[in-house]
Length: 363
Image (cartoon, rainbow, N blue to C red; front, side, top):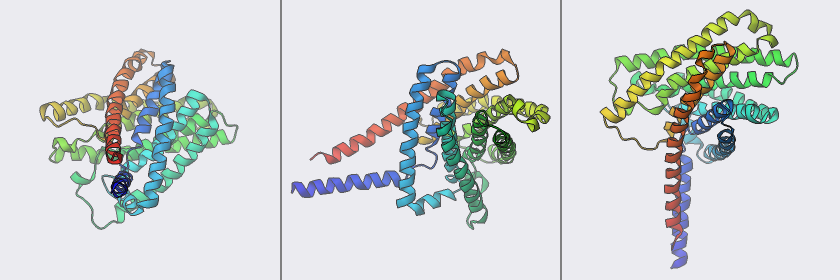
């Protein structure tokens, strides 16, 4: 009897584990993005103990999610591919690109490890090419498509974040390369920066149109809408790093006024979104009493806060706008508070799953 019971419990546990892998959210790498950029921001602001701690935690997050994602692709490839061409879930896969490149940026900025960063850059670039053309081709040729108000969300802008994350890591890697590779890497960074900006203009036009001309209920305001700001923040960071590479890339020198202008343009646009998003969050959770409970998508709201801190720090230095120096020094605490809230929800979710497994394994 006991053997039969143990077998039943083991079967239930295995079924539950398979269910977790099968239903792994496509955007879970946003946890790596968020943790990575807050770690970098802390390092830039000389809060080193938090930066180092979050680096190692983020490395564990990344390895765990890579393993789970590969298992999902291996054993549940139909669900995986179905999600890739789903208008709401598909863009979440771009967090794989951004997560890889931001972790690569951590390796360079915090530990000056260019070898590990280069490996992550290759992973990020390969994933960007595959996902970029698979997802958008799928959206284009699929026969059954949702209407605009059901199909587009702020998560679409993760495609912009992924593109700009390659620009950021390419610029950082270029600092340790000799010519002509330094020139080529900076050119790639410039191309990615320009393409990311164009992609944002396309997508934010549709998102803002959806905001203002379709019915909007609290459930529609999912956390990835914060990427409206985050995409501009990482574009600002990429532009600032390109400005700092002027001496190593003559073509950047010739475009310098344009790059400086658009870098400030991106920062101002991202800054405009911050009060708007806070107001909408208050409307959602306080006025409309929408329940606030942990969802992996909330990591998509943490990332922009950390990225705004880092991009403001870099832009102030690159453009000598030193009266902005105080902004990241205070904004980092808002970002850390948001990260702690999301991490607490994550731990609670993990403990709930763990207790379930323990209860099923106990005879």
